[in-house]
Length: 301
Length: 301
Image 1 (spheres, each protein chain N blue to C red):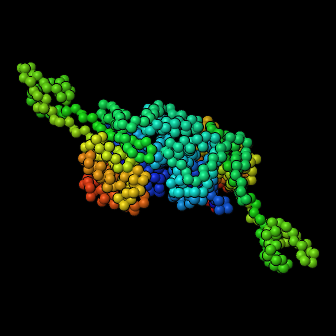
Image 2 (spheres, each protein chain N blue to C red):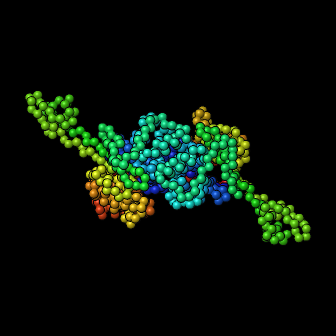
């Protein structure tokens, strides 16, 4: 699982900082999460292939999370894309994009599918044989979802020495990897655990931005490997965080701790602070495993 | 008259090039012309004060000319702007911006006025005591206008030595600057030209992008000081220019020559060419006074 931060600062794009957008790679699939203005240039700068992005998830309709979407959709068309593109986001996202395409008298040659979200309960919005994506209902000034990306547990790993010692033919390997026991020609039953190793543990990533401190998300994000939780402010601006329905680094760390996640990744920083290190310092007083998102930074989990 | 090029490349923003946007300063007024994605960051990089921009002109509704507008409008609001902002552009521009503001549940605290354009004839769309702006109907794949910015002729300059020699009191200075003759106490009439110098010549700037080669614009841009004319392609791609309703550097230079403009400024380059110098070389075979726009470049005219 590889995460590339294209932008992680709040409010407006600035000379050296970008609004929210990130690319999550799981099992060779690329998921674009949020799409602030300038995302297409950030994709270029980070050498991410446009053609590999088939699914875009938009958390909410504040500009710093979606103003770059129409540019991405439009540029994909200009570059001759033919593969379907799926966009998941709040009701209204379809009208925003299609209005602009219609008025510019330019349509996409590829299939453009909108999956508009309205549910206030968590729901599965994407699933294939390797990955599952669920919404994480958040509490912000407009309808907002975080997204939980879960790898599915893979097949068991074959113990090659063991299967060869038992003289098992290769045509049985797949059913062994699927977890089945094997009966040898002499009638002996070999338990699957003697022929295989446990599969690589399935990873999970929860993206939670923007949101006020909200414990109702705990059951959904419980035990995830990595939690990206917004920390727009430090504790010193707690009142402002409450008023604007954002979180402080302390609150993000408290959620991480209560959800027993393995790692906390902070982001969506207000640009009022000179150093983002202060977010880490504050969060580490509550939760020990804290990482800082920053534009252009990649994480291999 | 000072022109700052924020972006002058065609189609999509790229790592080192920006789509169309420029700032024209005339008589201490700042006019923003077109607003491709990333314009607000380009404004920051070029240290142009957001608060001084009160009028934005959008030529047409192709993404590389307006995708940055909603971000500019939104950022102005976030920064607490209170001064009115006027936007001039094709019908539809209001719906595009207001839909996004409505869905993001954020409105501007400042007055936001849209002046939607539909006329296929040139019309005056802005006028104050110093500056006049007219549309230049262009021919492109969607409804498109260029814009002609004309300084108004200022008052005559007082010849201080002359007025003092004639013993004329200061209370008459303004009517002399307005062009009136003066009758002295002894009845002698002093012609105005003996008391004043000609005013600084009024400058004019014509912005023409995007457009196919179109001679119907000649009467409108006749004799302008500076003509910005798109040159998306070189002559070698003339067929492609015709097909996409763009111009070549040769065609831009031909228009400049026929309109007897003083200077031609080229821009809206396709990124297929390695060096933009080739546009200048081609245009100079037809018209001698050719300048090249480039991102971040400023011109004092």
